[in-house]
Image 1 (tube, rainbow, N blue to C red):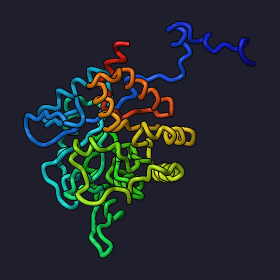
Image 2: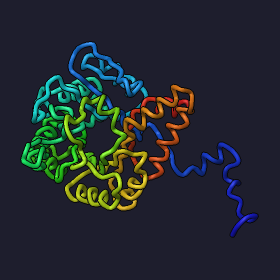
Image 3: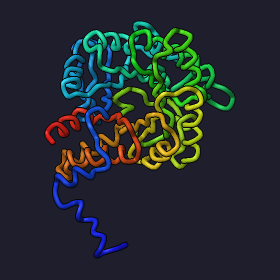
Image 4: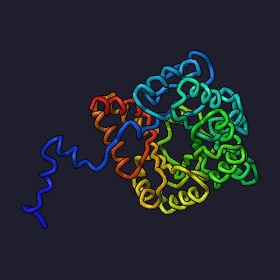
Length: 329
């Protein structure tokens, strides 16, 4: 059947009618708010390349947490910026590391807030890579299996501190299996793993590396993060994590990889997470500050697009703004 019998505009004639037939919705329960915590006292330092996003010290972060909770956001993704770095990222798995202290602090103030701990070594190593580096005749190499030992230690220490979810972002082979085994052996069989299953080597991470102080001191991360051109490989990565016991599958970045989100959604029943990453945030902020775009409309359309592609949850630096805008709606 075709026009004039079929008139698709019939279902668009009023706001109420459009609301009735809307296929995809976004709400505050879809959002996870990242937070950067650092050592020191009285710290509230805006990240230059991410307007509106701050480094917080343990004594000031309650201001940010209160705002997040008051807006109805139920989960935060925690990143730590330590004051000590070394070759093996020791402060990533110390019981008194910045992430561990922040987890305990957050849970003491807001015990019902879901704390997701990013589990990686790059913020904590003096070389900025996500694993253990060995120098050979062929140059610097990331030792996959040796790195898994330290990543597992970090995950267990985060769980001991009170993390609700472990989110390993390192892209080492076998990281979900290693961390799952480590958590189970330590008695944390109830702690889920939100795996950065499909993490591309992306130009969209630039502002985050300023925020996390995690830029590699040499080379790049292309030997462990994925080639942006590969979709079938993304399915292999996701399948491996499913078989190893992941509880969530994440695609990072989100905006340039909506096709990957849809592919995972069509194949797996696990919750799918989209990471609306730092440059996606910063580009919108920069254009909005110039008056070139309607920030609210752009952000909500982008987040809706991620949900439409198949994401159940969205990690986004726009979380607080989006929550406010949805309340106003």
